[in-house]
Image 1 (cartoon, rainbow over the protein chains, first blue to last red):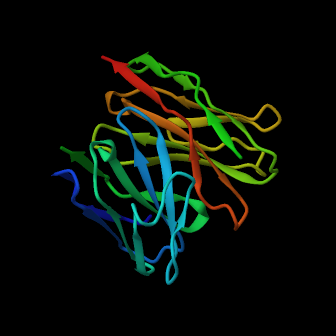
Image 2 (cartoon, chains in turn orange, red):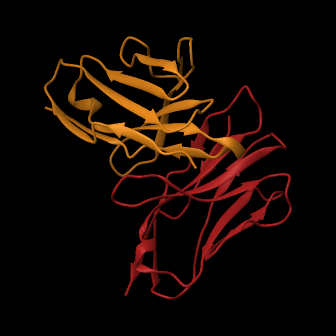
Length: 113
Length: 116
């Protein structure tokens, strides 16, 4: 199984600033995904990070707010831009291994003041 | 679009007993994958068990097993001999078999409490 290292694990940020979350996978994965998890709720897909091309965003999420990079098959970043308190959430990255299994990073708990 | 429904927000089980978590889903596809993930307070999403829709045999992983009813679109998780470490949020998830739709759809989750 793949191991995904995600950092930072948590951060407290000021309104209007940006935070970049990084995910490093210990092996190549074909697909990487970014999810948001509001407190006590389920996971909502933000976007699919495609290697070498622009990410594919779900309805309600836009590139200007959540720019994503995927420079290679083992690394991706998500930036939360111009943050507001409504962006306070847990952000999780995941990667698809073989047999369609999805492996997750340990999440980033973001609080925006 | 596929939807996943977990009708039990919370469940409780006595240590060493058996508990079943419910999940139903809605899809028009015939080929897909179903998963159960566990999320303890550490936030780490841990894969518990996986089922391919084309397989009639129910998946099992040690104390964890599923009851997959394809016609009823039901995918319940049975935890036998419950342990304190099983306490967590459990999410049921659906994934299409299609290359054009690779993302995972999650249910709302069931919080499982294990009583000593």
